[in-house]
Amino acid sequence: MNILVVDDARDMQLILRRILTLMGHNVVLADHGQAAWELMQQQHFQLVISDWVMPCMDGPTLCRTIRAANLPYYVYIILLTGMSGKQNLIHGMEAGADDFATKPIVREELEVRLRAAQRVLDLEHRLEEKNRHLESVNHSLSAAQRLIQSDLERAAVLQTGVLPSQKSFGRVSVDWFFQPAQYIGGDTFNYFPLNDELFFFYSIDVSGHGIASALLSMCLQTLLSATSELHCPEELDTPHVAVIPERLATRLNQHLHEQLDTGDHYLTLILGVVDTKQEQLHFVQAGHPQPFIYTPVSGRMEQVDCTGFPIGLLPDVEYETISVPFPSGSRFVLYSDGLLELPTVTGDLLSEAMLLQALQLHLGKPKDALIGALRTHLGLDQVALTRPDDISLLVMELQ
Image (cartoon, rainbow, N blue to C red; front, side, top):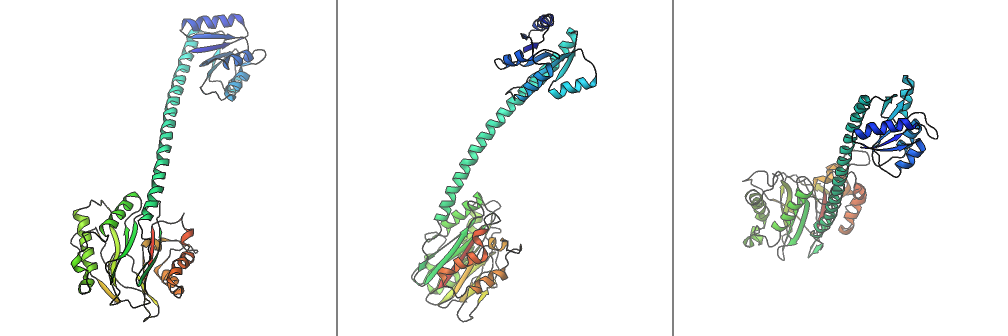
């Protein structure tokens, strides 16, 4: 070890240097605390053996100076003293000393104390190595976290980008709101005309939220696209329109079991077709929240009583198409269950009754203004920190 011996007595300096040199240590001498501190600012000493009483700067003051300097390495300090009594030991420990040795010096005693010092310094060195390693690991983790966050932000833009932008197709017009719980989510939806008379739509909620759910929802966008093999061209006519939803839901359920490894994920959906010529709405409900419908005949918004089994849980599930009149001026409202997990101003969760009340309240607003009114009424833009799940909301109208 590199040892600094601090003592104003020349004979004591020489004795200590002789003993320590024979033990194999490098020794530098200083006459008092001030000279020792100046040397410590120039060289790295692992151990300081200092007399207690000295001119210029005594041993306890040197201890306090070393500890206050917050050096990048630990310095082990042994105070030499001829004084006895607990109070003196306490005073030395409070000053920052690690150990004490009595005068006159006994070689065997000093050797034992140096061994204890070496163990402490070795432990300190290992801790420093571990801390440097942890700092390097933390730096790598922070860089990886920044990269993942950047990728998720880009993925969120891409996921939103695949959602439909066009909102008017002939007599059918649609408006929507989408907000994932995290950067990306498991909710998705789409709509497009199958031909001049039939308008196809769906709203999907993949279980969970995050990367796995988002990837499955993107895959479903492809599976249910207009060019998907799940669509049968021979069904795209008026006589077969009522069976399109149930057959498509059945094929999708089979495809998830036979072709895709979805793990523990499943999905709920509402999938259907608007027959604009016959003014009929045909849809399948597979575990999704019950939709709302308004028709000029009823004059009010009503919830459609329907049930169905989620997609992807069990094979060979049969689905049933629900058919209802959908005359001009009718509206159909689809939403994911994340909407029903939002806290209200009273602290309660939003209920279907509250949602129905909000829809009824804004019934007179044109379709283009309805989503904006609901965003304000339900506080959809103020719940980013308390949103537990993805939210999707679609309003479809036959003009």
